[in-house]
Amino acid sequence: MNLRKRHQRPAAEVHTSALNDIMFFLLLFFLLASAVANPQVVKLLLPRSQSGEQSVAKRTISLSINKDLQYFVEKKQVPLDQLMPTLQTYVHEGQELTVLLYVDRTVAIEDVIEVMDIANKLKIKLVLATEPKEKN
Image (cartoon, rainbow, N blue to C red):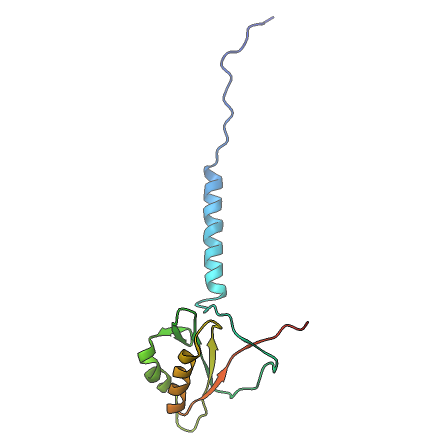
């Protein structure tokens, strides 16, 4: 009989290098998937209205103003001084153009009026986008 104690037991090890690789690939996958799902979306809190959605003309472009007073035409950032020339490139003879204006509810009305003045000078129809009110 061998009654000696074993002094050197093999140490139990867990190899996590494969888990690190898997976590890295999952993180990379979700980052790429989120970028493809909503590319360059401008996050805004729109004001609410009771009237709901209105019909708009067939030729429309979107203009967004976020809470940091950054202007986006068709999801491309445009400085305020370049807003008029940028909108003018969308105006074509014989076609009615409608600009859907998405403004964060924290933006001052003076900044909205400034965009409305530019649209009036270019004879562009302007529609202010809202969210429907929640029913109680």
